Image (cartoon, rainbow, N blue to C red; front, top):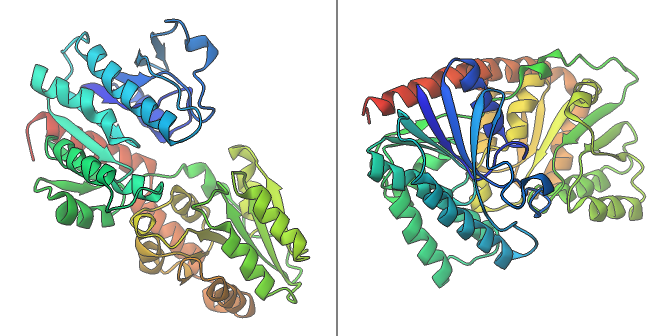
Length: 399
Protein backbone atom coordinates (compact mmCIF):
# COMPACT_ATOMS: atom_id res chain seq x y z
CA UNK A 1 0.00 0.00 0.00
CA UNK A 2 0.93 3.63 -0.46
CA UNK A 3 0.23 5.23 2.91
CA UNK A 4 0.20 8.91 3.79
CA UNK A 5 0.72 9.35 7.53
CA UNK A 6 -0.26 12.66 9.10
CA UNK A 7 1.20 13.53 12.50
CA UNK A 8 2.50 16.84 13.81
CA UNK A 9 5.41 15.03 15.48
CA UNK A 10 7.97 12.78 13.83
CA UNK A 11 11.64 11.81 13.88
CA UNK A 12 13.97 13.10 15.29
CA UNK A 13 11.27 13.83 17.90
CA UNK A 14 10.84 10.68 19.99
CA UNK A 15 7.33 9.30 19.55
CA UNK A 16 5.99 5.81 18.92
CA UNK A 17 4.76 6.91 15.48
CA UNK A 18 8.40 6.80 14.30
CA UNK A 19 8.72 3.08 14.94
CA UNK A 20 5.27 2.39 13.46
CA UNK A 21 6.15 4.13 10.19
CA UNK A 22 9.62 2.59 9.95
CA UNK A 23 8.09 -0.85 10.50
CA UNK A 24 5.45 -0.25 7.80
CA UNK A 25 8.27 0.62 5.39
CA UNK A 26 10.19 -2.51 6.39
CA UNK A 27 7.06 -4.55 5.63
CA UNK A 28 7.16 -3.24 2.05
CA UNK A 29 4.65 -0.41 2.19
CA UNK A 30 5.41 2.96 0.61
CA UNK A 31 5.14 5.46 3.47
CA UNK A 32 5.09 9.25 3.31
CA UNK A 33 4.78 11.28 6.53
CA UNK A 34 3.42 14.83 6.63
CA UNK A 35 4.86 16.31 9.83
CA UNK A 36 5.91 19.56 11.45
CA UNK A 37 9.37 20.94 12.12
CA UNK A 38 11.03 19.16 15.07
CA UNK A 39 10.64 21.25 18.24
CA UNK A 40 9.55 18.82 20.97
CA UNK A 41 10.30 18.83 23.87
CA UNK A 42 12.57 21.90 23.82
CA UNK A 43 9.91 24.17 22.28
CA UNK A 44 12.48 25.51 19.82
CA UNK A 45 12.72 24.38 16.20
CA UNK A 46 15.92 22.38 15.73
CA UNK A 47 18.65 24.44 14.07
CA UNK A 48 19.13 22.10 11.12
CA UNK A 49 15.45 22.51 10.15
CA UNK A 50 15.33 26.31 10.12
CA UNK A 51 15.28 28.65 7.10
CA UNK A 52 13.65 26.18 4.75
CA UNK A 53 16.20 23.43 5.25
CA UNK A 54 15.35 19.71 5.22
CA UNK A 55 11.73 20.21 4.20
CA UNK A 56 11.86 16.82 2.46
CA UNK A 57 14.05 13.92 3.56
CA UNK A 58 14.04 10.14 3.71
CA UNK A 59 14.81 8.26 6.93
CA UNK A 60 14.79 4.44 7.18
CA UNK A 61 12.82 4.16 3.96
CA UNK A 62 10.16 6.68 5.02
CA UNK A 63 9.73 9.90 3.03
CA UNK A 64 9.15 12.86 5.34
CA UNK A 65 7.54 16.10 4.17
CA UNK A 66 7.80 18.98 6.65
CA UNK A 67 5.30 21.80 7.12
CA UNK A 68 6.54 24.99 8.83
CA UNK A 69 5.32 25.94 12.27
CA UNK A 70 6.17 28.20 15.21
CA UNK A 71 7.89 26.30 18.03
CA UNK A 72 5.74 25.42 21.03
CA UNK A 73 7.89 27.54 23.36
CA UNK A 74 6.61 28.05 26.89
CA UNK A 75 3.05 28.68 28.06
CA UNK A 76 -0.46 28.00 26.79
CA UNK A 77 -0.62 30.89 24.29
CA UNK A 78 2.57 29.86 22.52
CA UNK A 79 1.39 26.25 22.45
CA UNK A 80 -1.88 27.33 20.82
CA UNK A 81 0.09 29.23 18.18
CA UNK A 82 2.15 26.09 17.57
CA UNK A 83 -1.01 24.05 17.03
CA UNK A 84 -2.64 26.60 14.70
CA UNK A 85 0.43 27.22 12.55
CA UNK A 86 0.89 23.50 11.87
CA UNK A 87 -2.82 23.01 11.09
CA UNK A 88 -2.72 25.84 8.54
CA UNK A 89 0.67 25.21 6.96
CA UNK A 90 0.24 21.43 6.73
CA UNK A 91 -3.14 21.84 5.03
CA UNK A 92 -1.56 24.16 2.46
CA UNK A 93 1.39 21.78 2.05
CA UNK A 94 -1.02 18.89 1.53
CA UNK A 95 -2.44 20.58 -1.56
CA UNK A 96 0.92 20.12 -3.31
CA UNK A 97 1.45 16.47 -2.43
CA UNK A 98 1.13 13.75 -5.05
CA UNK A 99 -2.25 12.08 -4.61
CA UNK A 100 -1.37 8.53 -5.60
CA UNK A 101 -1.54 7.17 -2.03
CA UNK A 102 -4.15 4.55 -1.16
CA UNK A 103 -5.08 5.58 2.37
CA UNK A 104 -4.46 8.38 4.87
CA UNK A 105 -3.45 7.42 8.41
CA UNK A 106 -3.76 10.11 11.10
CA UNK A 107 -1.67 9.21 14.14
CA UNK A 108 -3.57 11.58 16.42
CA UNK A 109 -1.75 12.85 19.45
CA UNK A 110 -2.41 16.37 20.71
CA UNK A 111 -3.79 18.47 19.11
CA UNK A 112 -6.81 17.16 17.19
CA UNK A 113 -6.18 19.93 14.63
CA UNK A 114 -3.35 17.86 13.15
CA UNK A 115 -6.13 15.98 11.33
CA UNK A 116 -7.07 19.02 9.17
CA UNK A 117 -4.73 18.21 6.24
CA UNK A 118 -6.05 14.64 6.18
CA UNK A 119 -9.65 15.82 5.93
CA UNK A 120 -8.65 18.32 3.24
CA UNK A 121 -7.07 15.53 1.17
CA UNK A 122 -10.01 13.23 1.84
CA UNK A 123 -12.22 15.76 0.10
CA UNK A 124 -9.70 16.81 -2.56
CA UNK A 125 -8.43 13.35 -3.53
CA UNK A 126 -11.31 11.12 -2.35
CA UNK A 127 -9.00 9.04 -0.17
CA UNK A 128 -10.16 7.19 2.99
CA UNK A 129 -8.94 8.34 6.42
CA UNK A 130 -8.14 6.08 9.37
CA UNK A 131 -7.63 8.07 12.58
CA UNK A 132 -5.75 6.44 15.47
CA UNK A 133 -6.71 8.34 18.63
CA UNK A 134 -4.03 8.52 21.33
CA UNK A 135 -5.29 11.69 23.06
CA UNK A 136 -8.97 12.47 23.59
CA UNK A 137 -10.08 15.92 22.53
CA UNK A 138 -11.36 18.16 23.97
CA UNK A 139 -10.69 16.26 27.23
CA UNK A 140 -6.96 16.81 26.83
CA UNK A 141 -7.41 20.56 27.27
CA UNK A 142 -9.43 19.92 30.45
CA UNK A 143 -6.40 18.12 31.84
CA UNK A 144 -4.50 21.28 30.95
CA UNK A 145 -6.77 23.43 33.11
CA UNK A 146 -9.59 24.52 30.76
CA UNK A 147 -12.99 24.28 32.46
CA UNK A 148 -15.75 22.30 30.75
CA UNK A 149 -18.10 25.23 31.29
CA UNK A 150 -15.82 27.62 29.38
CA UNK A 151 -16.43 28.96 25.89
CA UNK A 152 -13.04 27.62 24.81
CA UNK A 153 -14.01 24.07 25.78
CA UNK A 154 -17.35 24.28 23.96
CA UNK A 155 -15.67 25.60 20.81
CA UNK A 156 -13.07 22.83 20.84
CA UNK A 157 -15.78 20.24 21.55
CA UNK A 158 -17.67 21.40 18.46
CA UNK A 159 -14.52 21.30 16.36
CA UNK A 160 -13.59 17.84 17.67
CA UNK A 161 -17.04 16.48 16.86
CA UNK A 162 -16.75 17.93 13.35
CA UNK A 163 -13.33 16.34 12.77
CA UNK A 164 -14.10 12.91 14.24
CA UNK A 165 -17.38 12.68 12.33
CA UNK A 166 -15.58 13.14 9.00
CA UNK A 167 -13.03 10.35 9.16
CA UNK A 168 -13.86 6.95 7.70
CA UNK A 169 -12.75 4.89 10.65
CA UNK A 170 -11.37 5.35 14.16
CA UNK A 171 -8.94 3.18 16.11
CA UNK A 172 -8.48 3.80 19.85
CA UNK A 173 -5.61 3.05 22.23
CA UNK A 174 -7.89 2.64 25.27
CA UNK A 175 -11.15 0.73 25.48
CA UNK A 176 -12.74 3.47 27.58
CA UNK A 177 -12.33 5.86 24.64
CA UNK A 178 -15.22 4.01 23.00
CA UNK A 179 -17.62 5.18 25.71
CA UNK A 180 -16.47 8.77 25.22
CA UNK A 181 -16.77 8.68 21.43
CA UNK A 182 -20.28 7.23 21.59
CA UNK A 183 -21.60 9.31 24.46
CA UNK A 184 -19.88 12.70 24.21
CA UNK A 185 -18.71 12.96 20.61
CA UNK A 186 -21.73 11.12 19.18
CA UNK A 187 -19.62 9.11 16.74
CA UNK A 188 -21.66 6.40 15.00
CA UNK A 189 -19.03 4.73 12.81
CA UNK A 190 -16.76 1.76 13.44
CA UNK A 191 -14.35 2.00 16.38
CA UNK A 192 -11.56 -0.55 16.77
CA UNK A 193 -9.51 -1.11 19.92
CA UNK A 194 -5.81 -1.08 19.02
CA UNK A 195 -3.64 -0.83 22.14
CA UNK A 196 -0.09 0.52 21.84
CA UNK A 197 2.56 -2.18 21.88
CA UNK A 198 5.65 -2.51 24.05
CA UNK A 199 9.09 -3.53 22.79
CA UNK A 200 9.82 -7.19 23.43
CA UNK A 201 13.44 -6.49 24.52
CA UNK A 202 11.99 -6.08 28.01
CA UNK A 203 11.24 -9.79 27.94
CA UNK A 204 14.91 -10.31 28.80
CA UNK A 205 14.33 -8.98 32.33
CA UNK A 206 15.52 -11.46 34.93
CA UNK A 207 14.06 -12.54 38.25
CA UNK A 208 15.45 -10.59 41.19
CA UNK A 209 18.86 -11.99 42.11
CA UNK A 210 19.17 -10.40 45.58
CA UNK A 211 17.16 -12.46 48.06
CA UNK A 212 18.18 -10.51 51.16
CA UNK A 213 14.64 -10.32 52.50
CA UNK A 214 13.93 -6.82 51.16
CA UNK A 215 11.01 -5.96 48.92
CA UNK A 216 11.96 -3.58 46.10
CA UNK A 217 9.18 -1.70 44.29
CA UNK A 218 10.01 0.48 41.30
CA UNK A 219 8.41 3.35 39.39
CA UNK A 220 9.84 4.10 35.94
CA UNK A 221 8.96 6.97 33.62
CA UNK A 222 8.13 10.65 33.53
CA UNK A 223 7.92 12.37 36.92
CA UNK A 224 5.44 15.10 36.03
CA UNK A 225 2.35 16.63 37.58
CA UNK A 226 0.01 14.02 36.11
CA UNK A 227 2.02 11.00 37.28
CA UNK A 228 1.40 11.77 40.99
CA UNK A 229 4.74 10.41 42.19
CA UNK A 230 3.96 12.30 45.42
CA UNK A 231 1.55 9.46 46.16
CA UNK A 232 4.51 7.07 46.22
CA UNK A 233 6.52 9.35 48.51
CA UNK A 234 3.61 9.72 50.93
CA UNK A 235 3.00 5.95 50.90
CA UNK A 236 6.66 5.45 51.80
CA UNK A 237 6.14 7.80 54.74
CA UNK A 238 3.29 5.59 55.94
CA UNK A 239 5.75 2.68 55.96
CA UNK A 240 8.76 4.66 57.16
CA UNK A 241 9.60 2.07 59.82
CA UNK A 242 9.70 -0.73 57.25
CA UNK A 243 13.36 -0.71 56.27
CA UNK A 244 12.78 -3.94 54.38
CA UNK A 245 10.67 -2.10 51.76
CA UNK A 246 12.63 0.03 49.30
CA UNK A 247 11.01 2.43 46.85
CA UNK A 248 12.95 3.05 43.61
CA UNK A 249 12.03 5.91 41.26
CA UNK A 250 13.72 5.94 37.84
CA UNK A 251 13.11 8.91 35.57
CA UNK A 252 12.98 12.67 35.42
CA UNK A 253 10.44 15.40 34.91
CA UNK A 254 8.98 18.67 36.15
CA UNK A 255 7.97 17.25 39.55
CA UNK A 256 11.13 15.29 40.31
CA UNK A 257 12.91 17.99 42.30
CA UNK A 258 9.84 18.63 44.45
CA UNK A 259 9.27 14.92 45.11
CA UNK A 260 12.92 14.33 45.92
CA UNK A 261 12.98 17.32 48.27
CA UNK A 262 9.83 16.08 50.03
CA UNK A 263 11.30 12.62 50.54
CA UNK A 264 14.55 14.08 51.84
CA UNK A 265 12.70 16.43 54.20
CA UNK A 266 10.80 13.48 55.67
CA UNK A 267 13.99 11.51 56.16
CA UNK A 268 12.83 8.71 53.87
CA UNK A 269 16.05 6.79 53.33
CA UNK A 270 14.11 3.96 51.71
CA UNK A 271 13.04 6.19 48.77
CA UNK A 272 15.77 6.21 46.13
CA UNK A 273 15.70 8.53 43.11
CA UNK A 274 17.90 7.12 40.35
CA UNK A 275 17.40 9.92 37.81
CA UNK A 276 17.00 9.55 34.06
CA UNK A 277 18.43 6.47 32.36
CA UNK A 278 18.57 5.35 28.75
CA UNK A 279 16.13 2.68 27.64
CA UNK A 280 19.00 0.21 27.31
CA UNK A 281 19.59 0.49 31.07
CA UNK A 282 16.03 -0.34 32.04
CA UNK A 283 16.16 -4.16 31.97
CA UNK A 284 18.75 -4.01 34.78
CA UNK A 285 16.47 -1.79 36.88
CA UNK A 286 13.44 -3.98 36.22
CA UNK A 287 15.45 -7.07 37.14
CA UNK A 288 16.19 -5.76 40.63
CA UNK A 289 12.49 -5.09 41.36
CA UNK A 290 9.95 -7.38 43.01
CA UNK A 291 7.03 -5.30 41.71
CA UNK A 292 6.48 -2.23 39.50
CA UNK A 293 4.50 0.89 40.44
CA UNK A 294 2.08 2.93 38.35
CA UNK A 295 0.37 6.08 39.64
CA UNK A 296 -1.73 8.87 38.12
CA UNK A 297 -3.69 11.81 39.47
CA UNK A 298 -7.34 11.25 40.29
CA UNK A 299 -8.71 12.85 37.13
CA UNK A 300 -11.62 11.70 34.97
CA UNK A 301 -9.73 12.39 31.75
CA UNK A 302 -6.67 10.46 32.88
CA UNK A 303 -8.83 7.52 33.91
CA UNK A 304 -9.65 6.96 30.22
CA UNK A 305 -5.99 6.47 29.35
CA UNK A 306 -3.66 3.48 29.50
CA UNK A 307 -0.14 4.79 30.23
CA UNK A 308 2.45 3.26 27.92
CA UNK A 309 4.47 2.12 30.95
CA UNK A 310 1.79 -0.50 31.71
CA UNK A 311 2.50 -2.36 28.46
CA UNK A 312 6.23 -2.15 29.18
CA UNK A 313 5.73 -3.34 32.76
CA UNK A 314 3.75 -6.35 31.56
CA UNK A 315 6.49 -7.26 29.09
CA UNK A 316 8.93 -7.60 32.01
CA UNK A 317 6.87 -10.33 33.67
CA UNK A 318 6.78 -8.54 37.03
CA UNK A 319 3.74 -7.91 39.29
CA UNK A 320 2.20 -4.43 39.05
CA UNK A 321 1.02 -2.32 41.98
CA UNK A 322 -1.09 0.70 41.10
CA UNK A 323 -2.72 3.73 42.70
CA UNK A 324 -4.87 4.17 39.65
CA UNK A 325 -8.41 4.46 38.30
CA UNK A 326 -10.23 3.65 35.09
CA UNK A 327 -8.73 1.80 32.13
CA UNK A 328 -5.39 0.98 33.73
CA UNK A 329 -6.97 -0.50 36.84
CA UNK A 330 -9.34 -2.50 34.66
CA UNK A 331 -6.42 -3.96 32.67
CA UNK A 332 -4.41 -4.88 35.80
CA UNK A 333 -7.42 -6.56 37.39
CA UNK A 334 -8.41 -8.30 34.17
CA UNK A 335 -4.86 -9.65 33.78
CA UNK A 336 -4.76 -10.66 37.48
CA UNK A 337 -1.22 -9.34 37.57
CA UNK A 338 -1.13 -7.22 40.74
CA UNK A 339 -2.86 -5.03 43.30
CA UNK A 340 -4.66 -1.68 42.96
CA UNK A 341 -6.06 1.11 45.10
CA UNK A 342 -7.65 4.43 44.17
CA UNK A 343 -5.60 7.13 42.46
CA UNK A 344 -3.81 9.53 44.87
CA UNK A 345 -4.69 7.30 47.86
CA UNK A 346 -1.27 7.15 49.51
CA UNK A 347 -2.60 5.24 52.54
CA UNK A 348 -4.20 2.69 50.23
CA UNK A 349 -0.95 2.35 48.26
CA UNK A 350 0.99 1.81 51.49
CA UNK A 351 -1.51 -0.87 52.50
CA UNK A 352 -1.25 -2.88 49.28
CA UNK A 353 2.55 -2.58 49.15
CA UNK A 354 2.64 -3.86 52.75
CA UNK A 355 0.30 -6.69 51.80
CA UNK A 356 2.55 -7.60 48.87
CA UNK A 357 5.72 -7.46 50.97
CA UNK A 358 4.27 -9.54 53.80
CA UNK A 359 2.63 -12.16 51.60
CA UNK A 360 4.68 -12.39 48.44
CA UNK A 361 3.89 -16.07 48.10
CA UNK A 362 0.28 -15.19 47.32
CA UNK A 363 1.35 -13.18 44.27
CA UNK A 364 3.82 -15.57 42.64
CA UNK A 365 1.60 -15.93 39.57
CA UNK A 366 1.16 -12.19 38.98
CA UNK A 367 4.35 -11.77 36.97
CA UNK A 368 3.56 -14.70 34.70
CA UNK A 369 0.00 -13.40 34.30
CA UNK A 370 1.36 -9.99 33.28
CA UNK A 371 3.60 -11.51 30.61
CA UNK A 372 0.80 -13.74 29.34
CA UNK A 373 -1.50 -10.72 29.00
CA UNK A 374 1.24 -8.86 27.15
CA UNK A 375 1.67 -11.77 24.74
CA UNK A 376 -2.02 -11.67 23.87
CA UNK A 377 -2.63 -7.91 23.74
CA UNK A 378 0.56 -5.84 23.48
CA UNK A 379 2.99 -7.51 21.08
CA UNK A 380 4.44 -5.41 18.28
CA UNK A 381 3.91 -8.05 15.59
CA UNK A 382 0.21 -8.33 16.45
CA UNK A 383 -0.18 -4.54 16.50
CA UNK A 384 1.38 -4.17 13.05
CA UNK A 385 -0.71 -6.96 11.57
CA UNK A 386 -3.91 -5.43 12.92
CA UNK A 387 -2.92 -1.94 11.78
CA UNK A 388 -2.19 -3.12 8.24
CA UNK A 389 -5.53 -4.92 8.18
CA UNK A 390 -7.34 -1.76 9.30
CA UNK A 391 -5.55 0.32 6.68
CA UNK A 392 -6.41 -2.22 4.00
CA UNK A 393 -10.07 -2.35 5.06
CA UNK A 394 -10.22 1.46 5.08
CA UNK A 395 -8.76 1.49 1.57
CA UNK A 396 -11.49 -0.87 0.44
CA UNK A 397 -14.16 1.33 1.99
CA UNK A 398 -15.06 -1.09 4.83
CA UNK A 399 -16.57 0.75 7.79
